[in-house]
Amino acid sequence: MKVYTSIPKTLKSHFHKELVKYSDETISGNLSKAWHHLERAHIIGQKYPYTHTLVHWKMLQFGFKIKSSKEVIGQIPRLFFGGVKSFVGKIPVGNPGGANVPPLKSFPIEKELQDIFNNAGA
Picture (cartoon, rainbow, N blue to C red):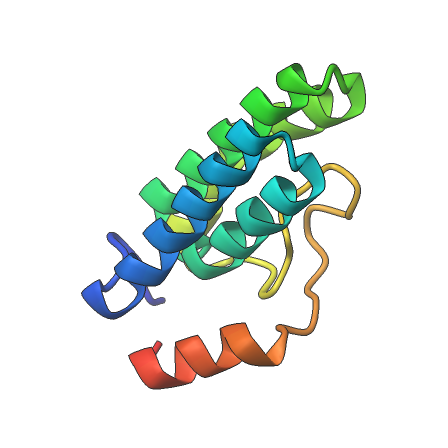
């Protein structure tokens, strides 16, 4: 069993870049673009407990911001179990992390993100 701990340096800058874009778009009021960057951060960081949990925390906060009870309720179990699943290497690859998708379903990874993973050796 592969145990994952922290995000590799080769991915960390990409993860943080998505969170910065999320913040910028949120401040600008572009909530759909903000969410898109949060989903991308989730896909990049979901293998690693801290980054996975951090994104679900931000998704929970976003749910409150947009007053979406579906998102808030959907994020609570993801917040508690996502990091644990990452730690033991049992994540649904490519899952964008929102309450609008099944939590255990894998999704194809868009080419740009796949290229990031390939170039990072992840």
